Image (cartoon, rainbow, N blue to C red):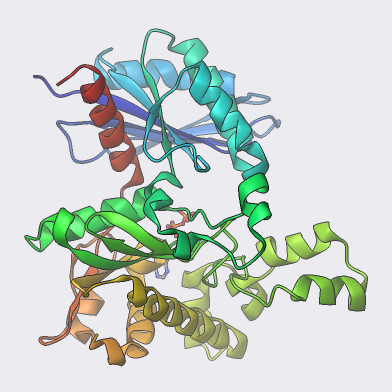
Length: 400
Ligand code: ADP
């Protein structure tokens, strides 16, 4: 069978990312980003084979107009041979335990999950509907961030609150970044010559959003994010775990509204809130070098909380085959890796300084000392995983 091509689409409320993944190439044939959609500043930028960059102003364009511009670029890049479209969808609730062909029932189920992801799922639906109008002849597949974590046992996904809130209102832990945790744990097993179905990993996805995961035999057994992506680690601008009573405390003592408290915890906290400087780890590392006290503290809190989460998730593992770092921070910050692993001596983990310094800028590798469980840096590739899930579902449908 000849190599097949899958277009991967990831829609936000005012953005649209795309990547054309070919089975015959390791990097996308073309990838790009349309942002500020719906405004006069809307624009589209794209890259061929990861290098040449082009840009186009699209004043006033929405998702459909942006996709109309993307379509000929994609057709040109794959010679008109597109086999399917994989759509990233953040929340699949309990309904989706794996990727799903998008039909009327799937659309209704994604719609039903909107209350759980009020910012993300409506944007995904906009993108899906625009793409289905423009490519009606192609199969469209939804790949969910939450699906990988549906294998968590009930003792890991339930909150200690009355059961009716779970049964009647779906209040439970879901977890996110599933596509990334799945991809890097599969890659780690492959790199180490282990069978994914008989392996045991801790994974840390550290980007603007951050989460950890315990992956056993290819399945998520626990993860740090919960009902929403706010739970767990310190992130770029999200607080991660705080005392749940903080909400009531701020409301009573400062008279803050729900919207103000949610904005504080989601957009003004994390690295940004602690440092008062930036949500970007690169900027904080530079400020730390200059002796900036609050930036230094932000990095310390980030690393300690990361280590604490990893140690807690070790409870879900029968043994530890390795710890995997990924995401912009995990793939590039030797400092964060060294500091967080420094707290994990009780798990026997220890970092090799030279190897740690070498694994940056997309380099895959092992960074542990002899005698330590494996510590790996594995660049994530969510688009590739979405394309692979899309192809697997198409194969299953066609009985291949
Ligand atoms: P997103 O979650 O938006 O996909 P990324 O995975 O690209 O984000 O991660 C963004 C984070 O990675 C930012 O905090 C950024 O500062 C950090 N990062 C990128 N390169 C480096 C680097 N060389 N050193 C430290 N942090 C880096």
